[in-house]
Amino acid sequence: MSDWTDTIVGDRMTVDREFNDRVTASEFTRQEWGLIMTATEFEIANASDPEEARIVADTEKLPQIMPELENVRSQMAQMGGSPGDGGSSGGGLFDSIKGALGLGGGSGVDQQRLDAAERLVQEYADELQNHLENRGKWEQVRIAYQE
Image (tube, rainbow, N blue to C red):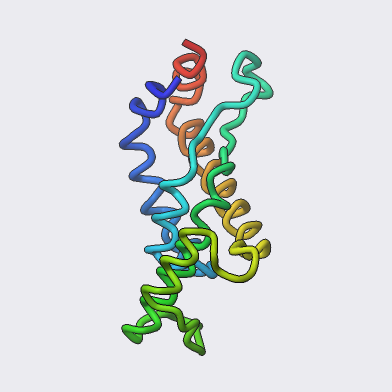
Protein backbone atom coordinates (compact mmCIF):
# COMPACT_ATOMS: atom_id res chain seq x y z
CA MET A 1 0.00 0.00 0.00
CA SER A 2 2.96 2.36 0.17
CA ASP A 3 3.01 2.73 -3.65
CA TRP A 4 0.01 5.03 -3.51
CA THR A 5 2.15 7.66 -1.78
CA ASP A 6 4.62 7.58 -4.67
CA THR A 7 1.85 8.82 -6.97
CA ILE A 8 1.30 11.97 -4.90
CA VAL A 9 4.85 13.18 -4.28
CA GLY A 10 4.34 16.35 -6.32
CA ASP A 11 1.02 17.01 -4.62
CA ARG A 12 2.66 16.61 -1.21
CA MET A 13 5.31 19.15 -2.17
CA THR A 14 2.61 21.64 -3.16
CA VAL A 15 0.69 21.07 0.07
CA ASP A 16 3.94 21.39 2.04
CA ARG A 17 4.45 24.89 0.60
CA GLU A 18 0.82 25.87 1.19
CA PHE A 19 0.88 24.46 4.73
CA ASN A 20 4.06 26.32 5.67
CA ASP A 21 2.14 29.25 7.20
CA ARG A 22 0.31 26.91 9.58
CA VAL A 23 3.59 25.37 10.69
CA THR A 24 5.08 28.82 11.24
CA ALA A 25 2.05 29.83 13.33
CA SER A 26 2.24 26.62 15.37
CA GLU A 27 4.38 25.89 18.40
CA PHE A 28 6.76 23.81 16.28
CA THR A 29 9.85 24.96 14.43
CA ARG A 30 10.45 23.84 10.85
CA GLN A 31 13.05 21.36 12.09
CA GLU A 32 10.60 19.90 14.60
CA TRP A 33 7.90 19.70 11.93
CA GLY A 34 10.31 17.81 9.69
CA LEU A 35 10.84 15.22 12.43
CA ILE A 36 7.11 14.99 13.07
CA MET A 37 6.41 14.36 9.39
CA THR A 38 9.19 11.78 9.20
CA ALA A 39 7.53 9.84 12.01
CA THR A 40 4.06 10.07 10.44
CA GLU A 41 2.57 7.76 7.85
CA PHE A 42 -0.62 8.38 5.96
CA GLU A 43 -3.39 5.89 5.32
CA ILE A 44 -6.81 6.05 3.74
CA ALA A 45 -9.55 5.03 6.13
CA ASN A 46 -12.67 3.47 4.58
CA ALA A 47 -10.89 3.35 1.22
CA SER A 48 -13.50 1.03 -0.30
CA ASP A 49 -16.28 3.59 0.29
CA PRO A 50 -15.95 6.60 -2.03
CA GLU A 51 -18.17 8.72 0.24
CA GLU A 52 -16.46 7.87 3.54
CA ALA A 53 -12.80 7.52 2.44
CA ARG A 54 -10.49 9.94 4.25
CA ILE A 55 -6.74 10.43 4.51
CA VAL A 56 -5.76 9.88 8.12
CA ALA A 57 -2.43 10.36 9.84
CA ASP A 58 -0.93 7.31 11.53
CA THR A 59 0.83 8.98 14.46
CA GLU A 60 1.72 5.90 16.52
CA LYS A 61 5.45 6.65 16.18
CA LEU A 62 5.18 10.26 17.38
CA PRO A 63 5.63 9.47 21.10
CA GLN A 64 8.99 7.90 20.25
CA ILE A 65 10.32 11.07 18.61
CA MET A 66 8.88 13.64 21.04
CA PRO A 67 12.00 13.57 23.25
CA GLU A 68 14.07 14.27 20.13
CA LEU A 69 11.92 17.35 19.47
CA GLU A 70 13.05 18.66 22.84
CA ASN A 71 16.67 17.99 21.85
CA VAL A 72 16.16 20.02 18.67
CA ARG A 73 14.62 22.86 20.68
CA SER A 74 17.42 22.81 23.23
CA GLN A 75 20.09 22.78 20.52
CA MET A 76 18.44 25.76 18.86
CA ALA A 77 18.28 27.57 22.21
CA GLN A 78 21.99 26.96 22.71
CA MET A 79 22.61 28.53 19.31
CA GLY A 80 20.28 31.39 20.18
CA GLY A 81 17.69 30.57 17.55
CA SER A 82 14.70 28.94 19.21
CA PRO A 83 11.61 31.14 19.05
CA GLY A 84 9.64 31.36 22.26
CA ASP A 85 12.09 29.33 24.30
CA GLY A 86 12.92 31.53 27.23
CA GLY A 87 15.15 29.26 29.25
CA SER A 88 17.75 26.61 28.74
CA SER A 89 16.62 23.07 29.17
CA GLY A 90 20.18 22.21 30.17
CA GLY A 91 21.32 18.72 29.48
CA GLY A 92 23.78 18.40 26.73
CA LEU A 93 25.32 15.21 25.51
CA PHE A 94 25.26 13.34 28.81
CA ASP A 95 21.55 13.95 29.39
CA SER A 96 20.79 13.05 25.75
CA ILE A 97 22.56 9.72 26.20
CA LYS A 98 20.78 9.10 29.51
CA GLY A 99 17.46 9.91 27.88
CA ALA A 100 18.15 7.60 24.94
CA LEU A 101 18.91 4.80 27.39
CA GLY A 102 15.74 5.51 29.34
CA LEU A 103 17.66 6.67 32.40
CA GLY A 104 16.47 10.27 32.40
CA GLY A 105 13.87 11.59 34.79
CA GLY A 106 10.26 12.14 33.84
CA SER A 107 8.09 10.50 31.24
CA GLY A 108 9.92 12.02 28.28
CA VAL A 109 6.68 12.85 26.45
CA ASP A 110 4.90 16.17 26.84
CA GLN A 111 1.29 15.12 26.25
CA GLN A 112 0.19 18.63 25.25
CA ARG A 113 2.89 18.87 22.58
CA LEU A 114 2.07 15.35 21.39
CA ASP A 115 -1.61 16.29 21.08
CA ALA A 116 -0.68 19.48 19.21
CA ALA A 117 1.54 17.51 16.82
CA GLU A 118 -1.22 14.98 16.17
CA ARG A 119 -3.74 17.75 15.48
CA LEU A 120 -1.39 19.56 13.10
CA VAL A 121 -0.55 16.38 11.22
CA GLN A 122 -4.25 15.58 10.77
CA GLU A 123 -4.83 19.14 9.52
CA TYR A 124 -2.10 18.45 6.98
CA ALA A 125 -3.80 15.19 5.96
CA ASP A 126 -7.10 17.03 5.51
CA GLU A 127 -5.36 19.70 3.43
CA LEU A 128 -3.72 17.01 1.29
CA GLN A 129 -7.07 15.34 0.64
CA ASN A 130 -8.68 18.69 -0.25
CA HIS A 131 -5.82 19.35 -2.66
CA LEU A 132 -6.27 15.95 -4.33
CA GLU A 133 -10.04 16.41 -4.57
CA ASN A 134 -9.67 19.90 -6.08
CA ARG A 135 -7.25 18.54 -8.69
CA GLY A 136 -9.51 15.62 -9.59
CA LYS A 137 -6.97 13.05 -8.34
CA TRP A 138 -8.68 11.78 -5.20
CA GLU A 139 -10.55 8.88 -6.79
CA GLN A 140 -7.41 7.64 -8.55
CA VAL A 141 -5.41 7.84 -5.30
CA ARG A 142 -8.15 6.09 -3.31
CA ILE A 143 -8.22 3.22 -5.80
CA ALA A 144 -4.42 3.00 -5.89
CA TYR A 145 -4.40 2.69 -2.10
CA GLN A 146 -6.63 -0.38 -2.27
CA GLU A 147 -4.41 -2.19 -4.77
